[in-house]
Amino acid sequence: MLRQVLQSLADGRVTRPDELARSLGVSIRLLGPMLDDLQRRGYLAPLAMPCASPCESCPIAAACTPAQARLWTLTAHGRTALSASSTRNQAEKSPRT
Image (cartoon, rainbow, N blue to C red; front, side):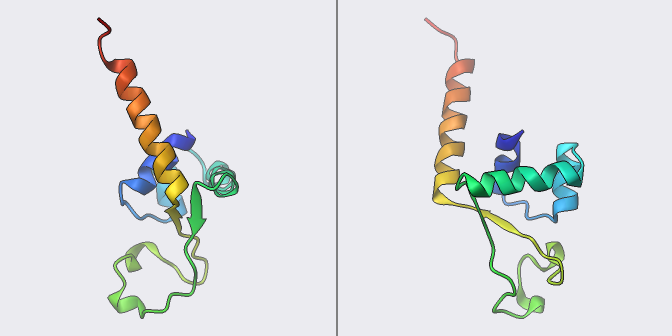
C-alpha cells in the first residue's frame, strides 16, 4: 500500500488527502499514518506552507486548502525507491529463459 501512495504522488496527481484516500480505497484515518511513515523513512517531504505565490497563479490551487493544507512531494530517496520497485516488478513479470 505504501508503494501505491508513492506511485499516486509520483504520477503528478496532486490531490487532497481525502481524495488520495478515496482513490486508494482507504480511510483518511489510515492514510495519515502512512504519509507520516513515508516521511519518517525519507520518501516524502511536506511542501512548505504557506506558499510564496498567490493562489490564483498556483498550479495546485485546486488541491490546496491553505488553512489545513498538508501537501507532500517525493524526495530523491522516494523517487529512487519507487524506480527500483518498478524495475523489480517488471523483472518478476518477464518470462524466465
